[in-house]
Length: 390
Image 1: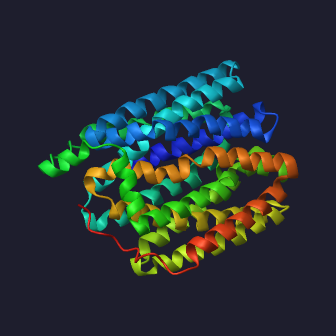
Image 2: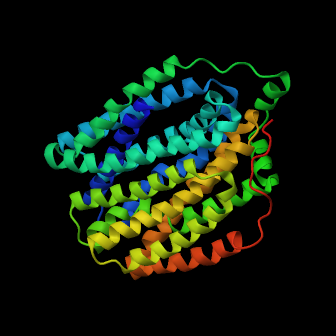
Image 3: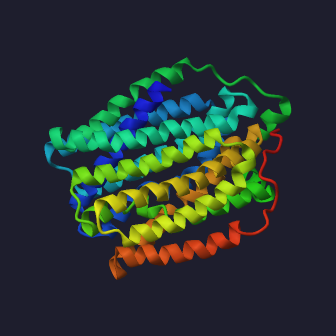
């Protein structure tokens, strides 16, 4: 857990550093969105193969290869920055390769966690994992701001490369997955579409996938793609203040993951509806904010609401997924984010460029409220308690 935390801190340091680098090199928010597009668009392209491989092959080896490649990419960008020769197209190319690694990392990692804990503890294991992730999300941007101010932008990328040492050691220590029954092993060799059929046929799973897609389409671009642009260009904040803005985004997400650890499953439906209400209110606050304090409060509430929804969605999907299909189910569910966010990032940046950031936030808030009212504020399709995993 400690090594994972250190690695996550490094990842968030690099993410903050990359946003600052792109903001320096890009002349418009759309150029910034294209870098994110290059990273995220390749994930759904490679996703079907990645999900199938996560079910058929040793997930540890997949993650080892992924981590080594990500470390090399971090060193490359740090070196180019230090040499003063980094160009925007370098970031787009690195983003493309990084996206390929993320395509294989997501389903392998999601499928590995349930191998390490009993089935009845899967939900709490994922909630704990998200708590570690979001704690790093608070610490990472703040450390990145300090490191960049003292040592330059390259330091954020070098720190991320070093942070991979712990996970590499842990992965070597994890034993291989024991062989399943003949039926399970045969199911592991079936095609990617079996994962889609499970998601589409299971009403609670499909409902949560649609909610996640709506989050990614209307709201997440303002946290993932445009937050640095919003802080610097809309509010006029400096790099340090933008780092703290990202840290407050982590506080909201961490609060959501801790509450999901503590609250019983019977409260899930209420938390989903609460998450929607909080998200709508916080988007309106973000559109109205003119100062640092209100912007921090708004982004904290926005990530709190979104991560109630993302966290519950992930729990339900993993609880209801058959073990032999878990990698493919994780990939299909992940498409609700990774296949949507590249286009929603471009859409939101186009809205910002055409109408301004505040108008873009208002337009997306209205669209989100209408969509989620249809998905959430009606009788649930089914009790979102876990099915028995095969």
